[in-house]
Amino acid sequence: MSYKKFGAADQKVGLSLERCYKTHKPLPLGGGLVIYGGNAEAPKITDADIYVSVQHNIMYSKAMFPWNPGEAFTFYIPDGGVPTNVREFKKLIEYLAENIKAGKKIHVGCIGGHGRTGMVFAALVVEMLGDLDAITYVRKNYCKKAVETTKQVEFLNKLYGIKKVAGSHPVSYYGKTDWYGSGTASTASKNYGSTSYKKDKRVVNPLTNSIGTVWSDE
Image: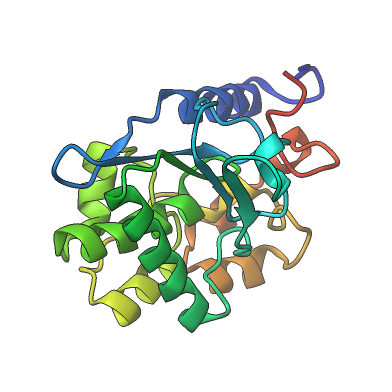
């Protein structure tokens, strides 16, 4: 993957993004049970029983076909956003919890495995451990970048009573618009609850290729 078009600061951010999901620890959920998270298209776990993508793309796997063992499916959540169907999101969390308790190995992924994946993990922490400081728990035991935006924090608080904390990442991470090209600097700040973006005009967005991931060129 080439970063020649970008400045040193952008290259540093891009390389950091590329590495982080590979270092994610499995999230402990009590009794020796865990769940794995990272990039949906390039999960470092290749032997999972169930793969869940919360973005558009998912790893090509034989599990995608119903006649083969395993499961692979998409539960789409907008990048930086929250689920649009609360009832189905709750069912997803219950489904994941049931299968984890049954001994299934599960991987949940988005692009970096932080915002949307972190939101799923925080909900699972409440479902399986009853810990309402769930975002802090996920950041400590999985990745410090988990649950990126104020909108995601507020969603978890409203739906599960999870303790509010600051979002992990400024909007500038998404570039001048979000990764799907919607919103200007001012609307992005409004949508994602951050003012830091207005001070940072660097465009990290071009690191993304045409199918929406920074890792597919590896």
